[in-house]
Image (cartoon, rainbow, N blue to C red; front, side, top):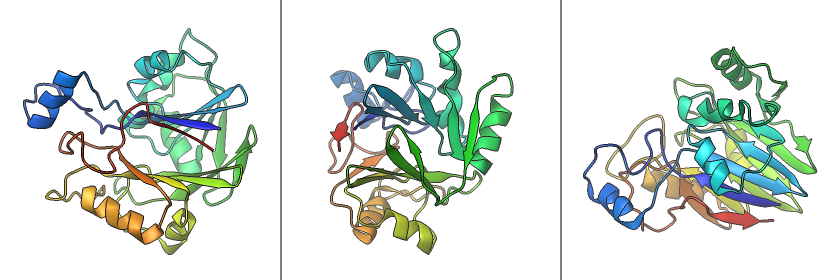
Amino acid sequence: MKLTVLGTGDTVGTPKIGCDCEVCKAALARGLERLRSTYLIEVEGHHILIDTSPDLRKQLLLAGSPKIDAVLWTHAHYDHIAGYNEFYRIQKYPPGYAAKGVMDDVAKYFHFVDFKKYPQTPYVPFELFGIKFTFVEVNHPGMYTCGVIIENNGKKIGITSDTNDVLSDRTVAAFENCDIMFIDALMNPTIHIGKHMNYAEAIAFADRVKPKEFHLVHMSHNIPLDWKYVCHDGFSVEI
């Protein structure tokens, strides 16, 4: 199984339109971008997405235009779902998997799309193409949101999705001892936003749940490109 991070940016991406901050200027000068949040999983000829960002067309082109067999959604904010309509006239809309509250939100947003819906119960594992997935509830005020646990070949990957660090004991326990984690880190340590973790809070959370390896994602242009633990678009791991 191979997982590729197709997007590590927040809702506006990096470089931010019209911004002349040092991070955005450096990104432009180096030809780098932080596209919006999408993960691609490849396993034995099958392809699964976690979230479908507004940048999905570009992301799939860069990934070699794979046929997508299933989509998992963490929550229904624009920057995590809007790209689902990119499948129009490309392939049959892939079936969607999400916690019931998330699926209801996504179905309402895509009321004009006919697709198969498979609502899931948080903390109850389900399998797709031999991979075990589990949605776990996180804390993203204003929008019901779940992180994802992925298990394959005795290894465990955790994706927090958008969240602050005030999480239930059940969710913290689910994230403990991952082999690899991808952790929300929207802002630099000087900025605190209640809906997300900042850089320092994300590192503290990693220390709390103790993954063997972790990478910071869902970053705004306030996070420099070369800080430690910063993930970059196109980063991949195999388990």
